[in-house]
Length: 135
Image 1: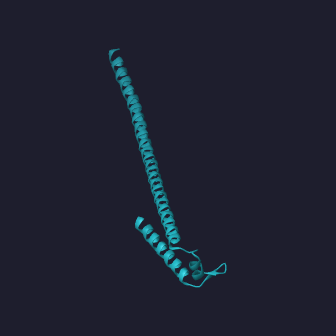
Image 2: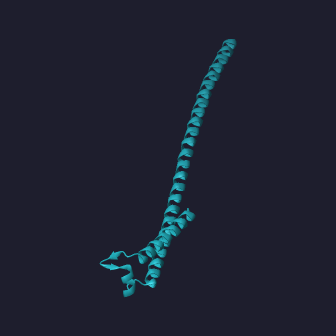
Image 3: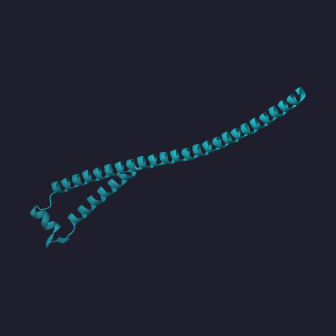
């Protein structure tokens, strides 16, 4: 993206320079004074143009830096959002695994209770047979 901004910067600076050069060589009248007359009057000096171009360059550099910071901030926000989405996906996956483990534990507990009831019934039956045999 940095290269694209430099290309735009170079293009816009070149366009401005060519436009100002064209304006200086034409007989366009601004407020009744042509560019040639303005040059003769000293109103249009190259040093003023250089200062304006330097200010434009500085403004373009500042804009490029601001765009770079905005892109970095957007990338960081996108990365944070992706990380949050990954956390949410992990949370859902882990919640599902926890539900499955709880269901298996409940089934195992139910099996234990059923087995205990059968063992108790077998003990009672054996005890009844032994009591009948003794008595």
